[in-house]
Image (cartoon, rainbow, N blue to C red; front, side, top):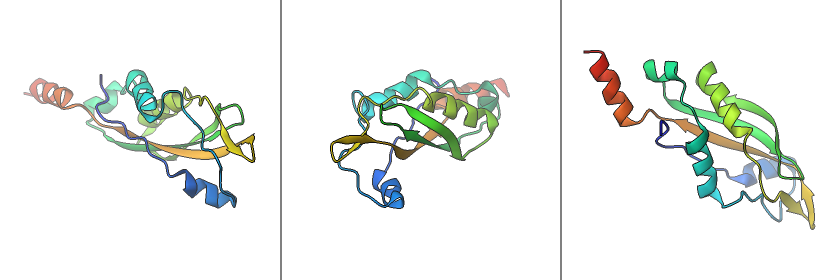
Length: 133
C-alpha cells in the first residue's frame, strides 16, 4: 500500500449553511467512514514521479452528491501538483453514497469537500535514500 494515511473529514454543516438551510439527514456511505477510507487506500495509485520527487501534501476535492447518492461536478479546491491532483480526482469519482442527503423526507443535492492526504510511507522513503547512496 503506497498511501499510508488518508484523511477523510467533513463538517457538512459548513456547506449546508452556505446554502441557507439545515439538512435533516446527511448522505451515508456504505459501511461508513472506515469503508470510505478503505476505498481510498485500495484505489489510490501514488504517482511514481511524485514519490521520486518526495512530494507529499493534501489535495482538497469538492463535489456534489446528487439525489441518487452519485458524486458529480468534481473539482480541485486546493491541489499540490497536476499528477497528484488528477489521482485525487480519479478516486473521488469512484465514490457513491448508498443514501443521499434528505430534507423533509425527500432526497436533496449537497456539496461536499474531502481532503485526500498523500504521504509517502516510511519504507518508500528508506528505499529512495538507499537508491541515492
